[in-house]
Amino acid sequence: QVQLVESGGGLVQAGGSLRLSCAASGRTFSDYAMGWFRQAPGKEREFVAAIGWSGENTYYANSVKGRFTISRDNAQNTVYLQMNSLKPEDTGVFYCAAKGRPSGTVVDWDEYDYWGQGTQVTVSS
Image 1: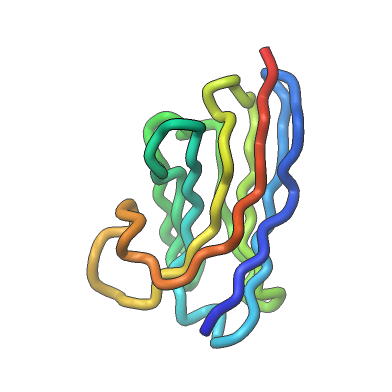
Image 2: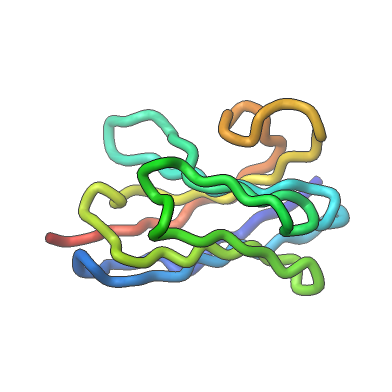
């Protein structure tokens, strides 16, 4: 089992920044690729960003490329999502997730094995 706890969400004006953190405990953190997903009210959960176990490979949704940066610190068992130039359409609950299987794509939420409880991000216009 892997337990994931997100933090860092909040209310920010458009153009502002937030840094989300996701602290992991349980199994070996570096065994897992990590992803961030978000879900806006009335919409399906969507992929935001992912990072491989070593941190060398990163992946982003087109809508956040150039604005968001995913990173991880395996010594601290933590993955981060730095969000800059935030837009109202970024509003939603952000979830971090851990993917243990090497096969499959990192953009599909059903490829992930463990999920955090989510943290709310609200961007006002």
